[in-house]
Length: 85
Image 1: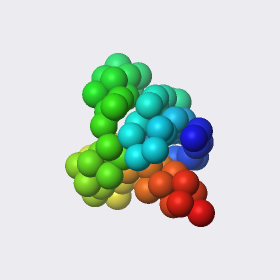
Image 2 (image 1 turned 60 degrees about the vertical axis):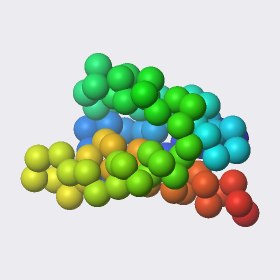
Image 3 (image 1 turned 90 degrees about the horizontal axis):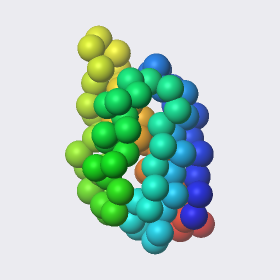
Image 4 (image 1 turned 180 degrees about the horizontal axis):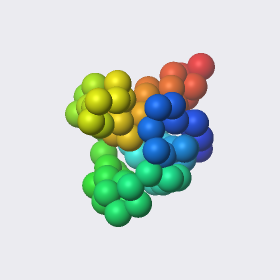
């Protein structure tokens, strides 16, 4: 299942996900800190979406109320809800 999520409150603009069941098959983040986000995308491939949600939820970037990892968690949460509908 492919899912695109428009981020809110971060330098990144979009998270593009591909899930195979509950596992992350592929992920790309458009915008943001290119090298860091490429590294994060490589690390989460093959992981269970819920494990990534648990680790990334609530992470802040400086004084912002969110971050790219937090937005990834939100994208995954929404994608999992869509999958179950």
